[in-house]
Length: 269
Image (tube, rainbow, N blue to C red; front, side):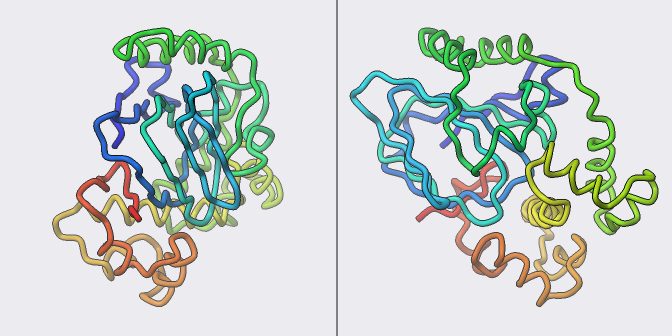
C-alpha cells in the first residue's frame, strides 16, 4: 500500500523514521483501521479532498486542483481511514519527539485534534514545488526541505525520559521523576507539550506497539508477549488491548492480512 523510504541525511535519521508514498498500483477503494502510535506524521496531498470527523479520515480524489498538508498526531482509539481512489500522497513519519524540531510551535499547539489540515505558508509553498517534481525526485526534495526547516532545540529531558521508558518498560513514572529530580506534574507537562498525550497513555501505546513488533517473531506467543511487555496478566492484557483496538488480542492478530506487515499493522475492512 505504501512505499517506504528511509532518510539518508544523518541529521534527519535522528528525528524522522521514514518517508512513505502511497502506491498507485494498489486496489481502491481501500478502508482500514490505523491503531494508536507513539509517532506523528505530516502528509502532503495533491488534488484530494480531506474530511475528518470523530476518528474517521476520508480521502477522496477531486477534479479541483488543490494541495493539502495534514498533520496526524496522537489518538488513543482506532482511526478509520478510507481512500475512495488513489491520490498523490507523500508523508513524513517522525520519531516520538521528532516533529518538534521542525516547527516553532510545540506539538500540542499543532495538534488540537488527532487529524488537522495545516495552514502553514512554508509547507504549502513546498507542496507546490514538491508536486511539480517527478515522482523519483520527491523523496530527496522532502529531505532537503526538512533539513532546511530544522530548528535547534533543547529536548534532552523529554528524550531522556522516552529512552528510559523504552529501555525499561517496567520502570514507573514516579521512579523516573525521582531519578531526574522533577515533579510528576512537570513530567506530565513535558509529555503533553512535546508528545501530545499523557505519560500513562504514551506507555499504553508503547506496550501495544511492542507487542506488534513481537508478533513478527516466529516464536510469538500471546500470553508470553503480554507478560513480557508489562501486562500484569491475561485479563489486563486483553482489557488494555481492547481500549486501543476495540478487539481482543486474539481477534486482532487473526484479522491481520498479508498486506499488514510490520510497518503497517492495519486491519482492513
